[in-house]
Amino acid sequence: MKTDKQLQRGDYDYRVSDDGLLFCKWMDNKVVAIASNYHGTAPTSVKRTQNDGTRQQVACPEAVRNYNICTWEVWTWPICCVAHMG
Image 1 (spheres, rainbow, N blue to C red):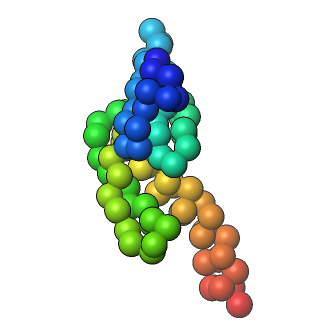
Image 2: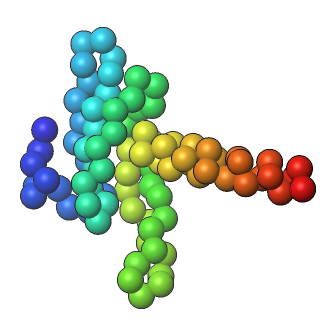
Image 3: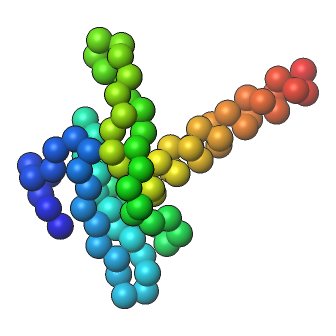
């Protein structure tokens, strides 16, 4: 895989094991490493807030985008339940 210094923001590199496990390294502001046996590396993008408050689309693999979506749902689910139950 590429070294961290070889990656610029939005770049990613990956390997897939013989039994189908994906290992992916993606560069945001820092390196993000992810492993998955379900999600792929199809190119997509996420919105990131810059220091000046503007939002920018940053390229990323599908596995990272799906992780961000699922993390938000897991995070907000207990809050929604508490709010609903009063």
